[in-house]
Length: 450
Image 1 (cartoon, one colour):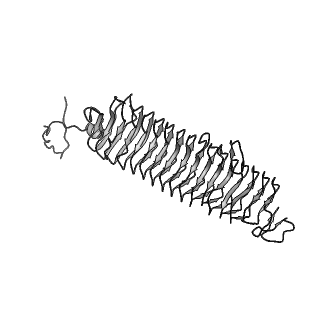
Image 2: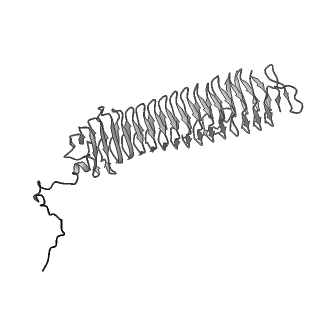
Image 3: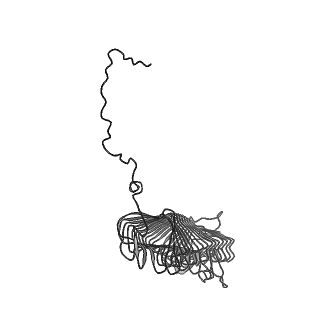
């Protein structure tokens, strides 16, 4: 027997209705709320006779599996701006006779982004957005395409991409491009990375391409890049460009007609290395350019004129141009020089030009050659080839196979020269040549010492 005891003063109240206000409602998110992006498939992005899939509206699209191409068709046509495609780690693979993997179809579908996946073996380009601008491609592996690997329009950005073995160029853009942390290897017919004017290439590598590794239009910047084993040459930039902290090694091929690093006019090259190339010139600086703290070492060519650095109307300061050689059967002054000046109004200062097959420094006219080391070269230490009116001042030339300082109607002052096979100075006197004296007996503050 149970007893219910209530404490004195405790009141009991009636409870509310127990009938639910309506049927139970879902408390979890819908699939559209979890994944708001659109799957690329035949239902969402149907194609036509020349495209497997067509994107006709702005939005975010993604793959849920690999795509295998079809002969005579593009993979994905982007037919509208403001589209993002996430390959989601999958592969878009072409077949024989296929067209481009992803394309704008020749229309300006601007503000497009493609990322995160692989593209291979298409009969056309890997990605062709060349008619569009403001596009981004990133985190892609693109390989073995018959057209250009990544073909982009103006004002584009390419980041963290690897492009290999395209039958055409690997990476080609319009102007105002930004290419960073990309690798380009093995273009069969063209350059590794080729960008238009006003572009930037940073932290990239370009190797084993048929033409130049890196090629830019004017007013561009190339920094912290490596170009190696390219058949046409290493790095070539247009007028008004800057090249900083780059290396070009192992480029070129017999007979050595190209260059490791080549500039247009009014360029700056700083802290770069162009060494062990089979090229006519390790570094080429055209008029109005400045080359500072660079190295051109061990380059070789069979051409009758070749050098570590070619300068014309430029400033070369603090550079090393040494051990440059030749495979030409007739060696002489101009085969395998350290620094060759083939134009007037050039300054060569504080540079080391040792152990070259030809002259250490070879100049023409109206140049300043000051405070350089030119030792152990195969011919002359410094050779002024006849134009005259150069200032050759404060240089150090020893143990050269020819003349230490071989001048022609130049001002020759305050140099030191000794133990040269063809004599220390030629000529040894003249109205513009300071007295040649020994250090212990020198009386003239401008004396040349030997």
